[in-house]
Length: 303
Image (cartoon, rainbow, N blue to C red; front, side):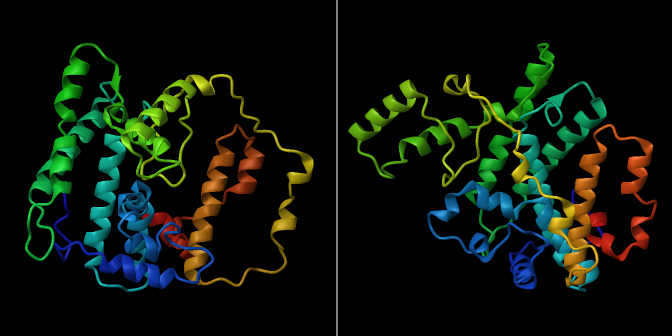
């Protein structure tokens, strides 16, 4: 899985700490969700799943690659960037909640790539040596055991199922239930746990806990069936672009921040163009310039 042109075989938190120090004080950050608190968590913060997602993400990986290309950091950073991206992709495949990332035979080429990647992930984590002593860690056991979904999905697809949502095999729903039970008392007694579980079961008190350690499981509940989402906004809440940005005065930002802004602007334009716009409107938003010729496209190319 690892390209042969990398100069180092060691993954370290050092490049991430360097990244946090580099982007500290910037208004537009390369990895906005990465902070010192995420890299140096307390005992209870280590159990928060969101912290791990902020580290093992495509934005963190692209930011490290940007540091190497644009800021001339050591090429050994690329190994850490590759590992972060690998774990992020593994998590996407192992927690699929829609048919796009689900395992299915609709697109055999994509399916074969996913299966090969998951098998390589098992081989990778079996060969990892973590820590100074290079001992086997529980995280390696967890990943290898979780990736046994390969056998399950093979049987399900062979039985005629169209696709397999791997998120249905996780315990996010159970952990979210525990988070709701511990909402009032983090360490409930057996009696308190029994009453809280009864209240959760009967009252469908399963709203997401923002301070919980796990992500939402994505399932619907009976209590939410009649809830309606009002996405409309009133006129006073709508601001014109001229009120947000003074077009006559360019912002005083660094080259790195301009690359981040260029990436954000490209994302917004792409979303706008996805709505059926006429050719004239698209030409007003898009300019045919190669990303390689634009110095502000450095981060966009790496992502």
